Length: 177
Image (cartoon, rainbow, N blue to C red; front, side, top):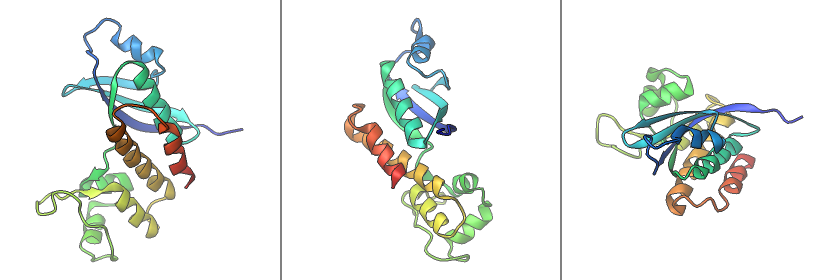
């Protein structure tokens, strides 16, 4: 028997007015009954706890369900750009430990920031960080796979402007790798 697991992630969408008649029903009927909906800063926030055999299947099915509502999928979160605090929270390590890694005071080769490099609050690519932390045996492979799926999903969404062509298959291939 295939084991189902709850996968948590958020889909940011746009294009529907939350004041319209039947707004929430539209999501429920499309299969988003496992999402908590909110409307913030002009976008729809759908926070999923989706049961699926894999993270890729959970994200892909939620993506397709959101499209069924008539909304446009903007991106999948958690975001791939992370601060030191984000890295600590997501990895379960202390902020101090992460800071030591970034300064090469505890191991070498930690990824360089990819945004706001010269500011006091640089940002790192979560996928690069997970790959490094996994190589140091600090996090499991599943975190790397999930980071890769979110990053590729968002790249796909950007390039294909909401067309689901091969979306599911692309994500499943990442999980198999």
